[in-house]
Amino acid sequence: MSTHARDKPAIQVAKPIALHAVVIVIGIFILLPILYGVLGGFKNNQQLSTNPIGLPDPWVPSNYTNVLASGDFWVQVWNSSFIALATTFITVGVSALAAFVFARFAFRGREFLFTVFAAGLMFPFAVAILPLFLLLRFFGLLNNPLGVILPQAAFGLSLTIIILRQFFRSIPGEIEEAATLDGCTPFGFFWRILLPMARPALATVSVLAIVGSWNNFFLPLVVFNDPGLWTLPVGVQQFQGQFSRDTARILAYVVLAMVPALAFYAVAERHLVGGLTTGATKG
Amino acid sequence: MTIVLFILPAFVLFALLVLAPIALAMYSSFFKWNGFGLFPTNFIGLDNFTRLLEDEIFLGDLWRGLILIVFSVLIQLPLSLAIALLLNQKMRGRAVYRLIFFMPYVLSEVITAVLFTMILSPERGLANDLLAFIGLEELESTFLSEPSTVMYSLFIVMTWKYFGFHMILYLAGRQSIPSELIEAAQIDGATPWKAFRHVTLPLLGPTIRITIFLSVIGTIQLFDLVYVLTGGGPVHASETMGVTMYEFGFKRFQVGYASAISVVMFLLSLVFAIGYQRFVMRRDTEGAITNMRAKR
Image (cartoon, rainbow over all chains, first blue to last red):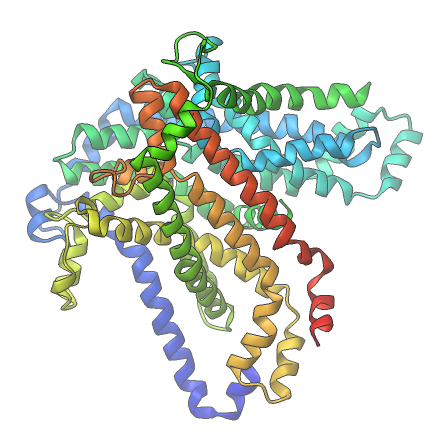
C-alpha cells in the first residue's frame, strides 16, 4: 500500500483526503445519535419537534437537573455499581481458583470438565432466563441483589476460566517448583505468586465482567419488582415507559445513564478491547 | 484434595445456575404449566413443540432471525471489514477514530434502543429531518411503527451498535498478518485489490469465520435491543424468539410453552455451534500459513 503510493505522488495527496472523508462520515454516523441525545436533553419538547438538529435555543438545563436531583437516578447508579462489583468479585475469584486447577494439575476427567465449563459460552441468559427465574423464586432470591449477582457470576465463569487458564498455563513450571521447594503450599503459590503475576489477565476479565453486568437488562428486569433495586438499564427502560410523551426528559436520562459507561470505557478501553479479542478468538 | 476444593465453588455455581435451569427448561417443555410451584405436573408430551410449528408468530421469529443473519453476514460484516482495513492504513488520528467507532458497543442495549426510539420517532425524531436536510424526502418514514420498515430500522440500529465489535476483531486479525506477505505480493505486481483478494482475505479467514459465528449465535438470542426498541411490534413484525418467549413465559404464564421456545433457541445454538465448529472452523487449527502453502 505505502510502497504503491510512493510511486504516484498525485495519489499520495488525494488518498489521505479521501480516506479521512470516509472515516469522518462514519464517525458522524456514530456520534450524531449521541450528540442528538446530549443536545436534545437541553431542549424542551416543542424545540425538539421544530428544531431537532440545531443547537438548543434557549438552553433548557432543567431536564438534566431534574434527573440529577431525583433520588431514583442515583439509587440506580449505586445498584448497578454494587451489582457489577459483586458480580466481578465472585466471577473472578471463583474462576481463578478453577482455572488454576485446570491449568496446573493433571487429573482424570479434567478435559471433560473443562469442556463442560467452556460449553457455557453457548448458554446465554435468554435461553435460561425462564427456568432461572423459577429457581430464584424457589430459593427466595427474587427482589434480592443476590438473585442477579449469582446467576451473572455463574454465566461469566466460562469466558473467565478460559482466559485465565490460558494465562496461568503460560507461567513457567520452574517458578512453581521453586516455590514448592521453599515450602509453599499449592494455595500459597496460587495466592502469593500466581495471582500477582496474573494481574493483567485479571484486569482484562474484570473489565469484561463489569461491562457485562453493567449492561445486563434481561435478568434484573425479571428479578427486581421493587424500584429501589432497579439497575440503570431497567431504570432507563421504565423511565421511558413512564414519561413516553416527554422526549426531552428521556433524552436527558439516557445521556446521564451513558456517562458512567463512557467514563469507564475511556479508562479501560485497552483491557476491554484486548479481552474481547482474546475471548472471541480463544473461546 | 486441593483440586476438589478449588473447583467446587465454580462447579456448584455453574451446575446450579447454568446447567440446572437448562435442564429444567427441557423438562418443563413437555408440560402444560402456569409456572406455580417448582415442578410442573401436567405432562403433554410434544404438544408444545407441535404447537410451535403451527404458531405463525414463532415461525415468523425464525424467518426474521434468518433475515437478520443474512443481512449481518452480507452487509454488516463486510462493512466492518472494510472499515477495519481503512483504519489499518497509516493516518492521523487513527486511535481516536477507533475509539469512537467502538464506543457504541460499550453502551447498553437499553440505552441504544431508547436513544433510537427517539431518533426514529416520526414527530420529534432526528432521522426524518436529517433525510429532508440531505434531500432524501422520499425516504422519510415512521420507521419503527411501520411493519414494512421496522426490520430495516432494527438492522441499522444493530449495525450502529455492533459493527465496532467486529471491526476490532478484524483489526486484531489484520495486525497479526505479517506485512511482508502483502508487500511481497505488491512487489510481484499485484494490484491492491488482488493483494487483498488473494493474500489479506484468505489470511483473515479464521477471524471472519469467528465473526460470522458470533453474529449468528447473537442473533438467535436477540432480546434486549428488540424488546426496548419495538417490543416486537408493530403486530409482531420485528419479534424475535427471545421476545416471544418473554411474552408467553412472563406475561401470559404459559411456562411450558415458553420453555419449549427456550429449548428451541438452545438447540439451534447448539446444533449450529457444533456443526460450524466441525465443518467450517476445523481447518483453522491447521494454521493460516500452512493453509496458504497447501493451496499453492
